[in-house]
Length: 169
Picture: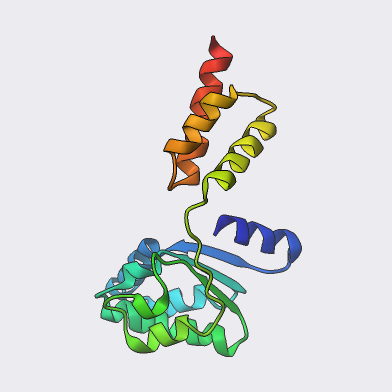
């Protein structure tokens, strides 16, 4: 999500991009309702050109929040603004999300991003090392890539740990 947002900002500097984890969006909606300032929250989105919401599945079972987000989403759609969402599953498989939201989530391009395979993880590891102008023993790197399979951040963290230890020794 950050890469998408950064690319949009770099390519279209005039665009206003807002990134929100769904949990923060929920908190902001609840706070606005409690303080009777929902209109202020809605105004916050008026100047936004691209809305990035991470982990949209967290809207599950939050009917009022879903209703408000539905209105925000519709405003973006009618104004030809962009909404980019991430979720741990495709829109049709979201549980306890209103059907009308699921159908709207399915309006655009859906990309299933799965965990990288061994070769891709190895290429990522070499890329991270190149960016640091560092090297690791090929067998250690192969072992690392073999065991860190699901999360590229975890792979990068392990590489950072190993290169830091290597530098300190």
